[in-house]
Image (cartoon, rainbow, N blue to C red; front, side, top):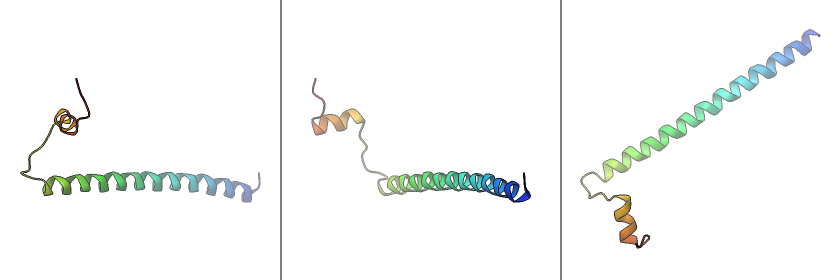
Length: 65
């Protein structure tokens, strides 16, 4: 194997590794952004009444027994 081929293979392997790391970081950033949205919503709704899933279904008439 020539050094050019070896270097090219090493480059592709390193590139794949870097792309996986970038993908992982993006996913973590999206998770953190979602968590920030949740914290903001909780802060905005602090002190307001909360409802269970069953209560919401009853209010909306989604579940009739």
